[in-house]
Image (cartoon, rainbow, N blue to C red; front, side):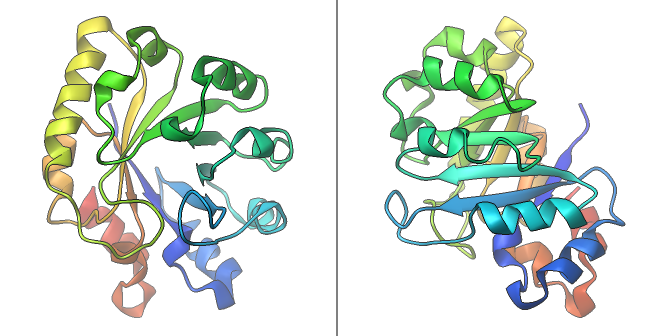
Length: 217
């Protein structure tokens, strides 16, 4: 299974966002990771529908939206015409996750669930794994970029990969938070095949993002 790198635009230069995206258009096998925050589920705000609509006009890559919001259901309809490829919501924020997944499947090619570092895999019923396209394991506590990677998440990736192989599930395992070239190898070996990287990619000297992405890969 090939590894997708998902640069997180939260760490990009917002004053030249269009140019930042165009620099990434020349890199193969990446998604653009978009953190949508509400200032409630996480203590931060990012960008909403108007900005995402503009991003779609510039980017040549699939848009991967991670909704760090208290009520993702409120975003399901209002974001459906923005050209998003993947819609990931936090398991912790929804009471009826099965219903939420079914609703999102009507409008988005890919649907994912996200688990915070302290949320165990055991909270997810086994049949749910077969309904999602992506599982995002947070390797930092969500809300801010530039945080230190929580190394215990590698064991969580291994456990999730074992679940995937045992039952023949097809979901991708995405890891988000503190990903660099120093820990990417461990994550890929553990079973991750979609890595979100923000600060590491966008802090590249001379904006050589391709070099940083290749080091992670």
